[in-house]
Length: 435
Ligand code: CMX
Image (cartoon, rainbow, N blue to C red; front, top):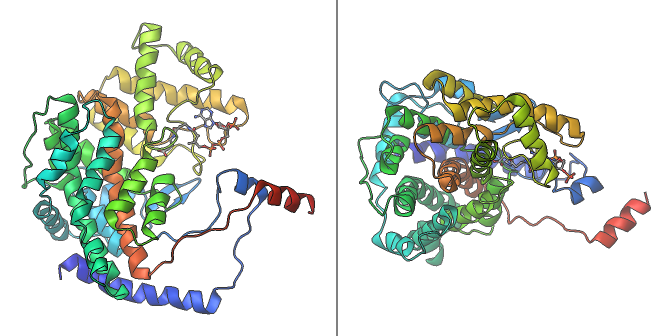
């Protein structure tokens, strides 16, 4: 058994027992109530699922096993000579609740590199798709094409003991995470670079190798990918992609089926697709205004036109957060450190000054501040990565780290099939009127 799996097994044994005790002794304790607005309004804020890998506070933002993004940037091991955290370290932290050493992270990089071989049939499946198939559609199809190698599905079929579910889920998760950059890079190169693919470099770390296979060889772009893959990895359990992975996984679907489900959810414009929408909106704005250095008044006018045409301002607002997203701020800091004088980055910063005031004036937007998607595109454009329909795939590769670490915990805890109660609108009408 490898060292990470050994640690996971030891911790999971203790924590699963704790959870069993809570369920047995305190299962009937009333903790929260639900109101009619929450039933109609997308279940906002209802505390109804278990998620250990990260937790989101409306004011403070995300913490991964208790660590904020600035703390992760400081404490997680780095690639030799680099300044950004290695996402391998975050996965380790999320899985076993401790910051790994440099050696442990290097071991994990190598372990993933050794599991990264993608079967030819996956590439053949992707090559059979029309070239203009949206990259996120290709991504989920690529993941589904790998499903036949699921260890969990195979062992379940052979009659696996439920006590061993976590073990098979761990193996599937490690394999899937290892292979995703190769599949994702393949999609990028086939869609935008005439199928001119780049072989992996097993000496690089997971995110650095991804950057290399995408074909953008600027060393700062590798640093950006390390940061990007770290900050997009998890955002507690209630967001649509994480929740979908958890929901699908609760039926004992394997990691491939569950992750593909989550990616279909990430591909919606109110969630992960917003990163493509932001840059598309900025490019359209530049074209419409005829300048890439718009004034704040021009920005204000364009934002108001967007709202007047019944569209949302992409990259702004959040279902939980009530302040600028720390993931936005981390990217802004990255830009300050690595990039000077970039017109698209400047537009993103100017929008940060103008959009909150315009959205705030509407009086209905609960959070007028930027989210993670408001900044990422401008950084990618800076390094020549302009094919924005691909951006959500980057988000998806990163999101695998959090949702699959949690899926291992779901199996270790033996969490139940998810099955909340739905109500009809007639039931709701009569329930509120009798109050
Ligand atoms: N532009 C215009 N209107 C907005 C808005 C925005 N950026 N954000 C919220 N609103 C509107 C809502 O559409 C809603 O209007 P109606 O009452 O007329 O339907 C009202 O303000 C209240 O919404 P809310 O409670 O503040 O926000 P929700 O929790 O319902 O929705 C979100 C959250 C993210 C879907 C929304 O803010 C939005 O559409 N943002 C733009 C898309 C985006 O950036 N998504 C990415 C989020 C991060 C991620 O998951 O990657």
